Image 1: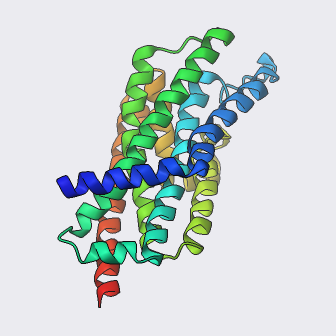
Image 2: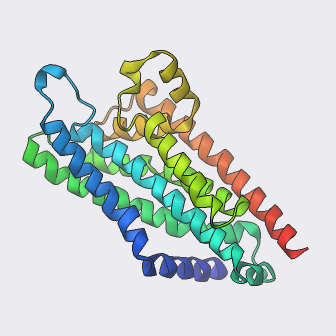
Length: 256
């Protein structure tokens, strides 16, 4: 446990030294929250467009922010692999699960900070717009976003284990685009229906967004909250197992 704590502390310091982590993991999601709020203010009431109202937008922005946590997880692992640092760690008593935990914990802290900051800004916006957010809903949504944060972090570690520091960010950019689109963050997938909705339901991003949005408005029905939560948690568990397995395989390959 002490080894994991020391490694986690090192990774947190590395992230804090990188100004891009503040830009993409903190500033950019908040900027998008403000921009889409302005977009919503220009949409006439007759359009019945509720996606960008703060009670729906805030949950989508949290998932959007987590995709950048994935990017930095991939960057951190791939950069350590390209240097001698991770090779030296391979010779230590730390197991693959210990190393993965040391990479994952700082990312989960960032994801939690993202959620708190997003809801803090969303609450201020809700007071201005008159669409008050429930404190209980925001707290529940922050907790409900943990499985998706684990999933995106695991994807980042998986990509960082499989690919180099040049290829991993590019692949993460693809996931960011897919997560934003197929997650229904910027459009209402359920109202669209048809083949597009079917495709969205195949991937976990749609369920991540649906779960957090439902928690925000205190909708804990099986269809809107419990089922999406279970699907997201299942994806998180599978990808986490895969990330640990692949990391261990690459660890043994690098040592041989």
